[in-house]
Image (tube, rainbow, N blue to C red):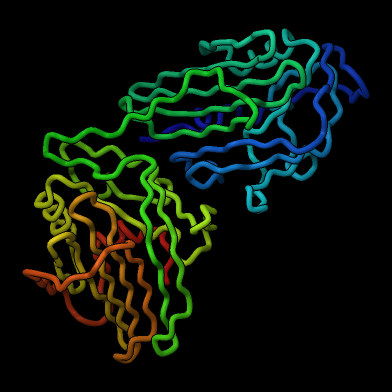
Length: 401
């Protein structure tokens, strides 16, 4: 499914026709009443690949430092969008600067809400919109239906100051939420109808996700180099977001491929780990309920190197090896039989037969067992081995250790 950029980022950049700056109200009766200073928000992002927001819920603060002059004859709502660094900065709670500013942060001049509405109507003139206009709030709630996709965008502002109180953008595909982003002022009690999160349902083939939105799974990550000396070790949490719908019937594994937009990685203190972390996109999960079918799809998509099934009483998975003299890389993936989450990932790097680097991600409480009923496939020749398709799915766009 493709969601148009216009429908996720609700306000495109339009041409602006302005005449002159004014020190006070312009000829439309619009004036700034907002105060400069720091404003605290909660920013929630689920499956938002077109923004810079990491998945999950984040406490952020906006430092509004300057206001731009109001021109006469404003005819574009994009004019209400302050410029990062020039007018404001946005930070995560740990002090990290939000990259390139938050695109959907806006402030609105007060004094003539009818004029503000007319300006916004230029953008939404061909689609229905619910206007919000109460004693304290002004804004809109906008829903667009495009085939099997429903898209919703909404903004609510304070009529006293023009400060953004609530921004919401969401998209549903076949009634399942596939994109959601929300930005709410901490002291504000939302008046918008909440977004409904519908978890994917089991398929006719018995496949379903064993994990749910909001589940948190603890792991230990260890890196060993320099003669098997532990050079980095830490405990982290993987917080599960919205997992992709499972096609019915399941045709291939790409349709349920997990990416970093489906989860977020936190340290022990709950701080989001940056994208340059050693394994920001390493975590994975597979559907449960029909292990034979999942195995069948894996086997049908294999080609290339040595491949080895592994199964224990509580988990199952596989081991692969890619060799090109003088190097050899082995990867082991083990998944929980109960919830489908990754129990263990093991990366082993060999040079001239000597192990030179090990990276392990292991679920807290998971005890590796000796595999049972191992089955080995050796496919292809020697030398440069073509990577198996499945590993391309799982490791695609993931950083090589």
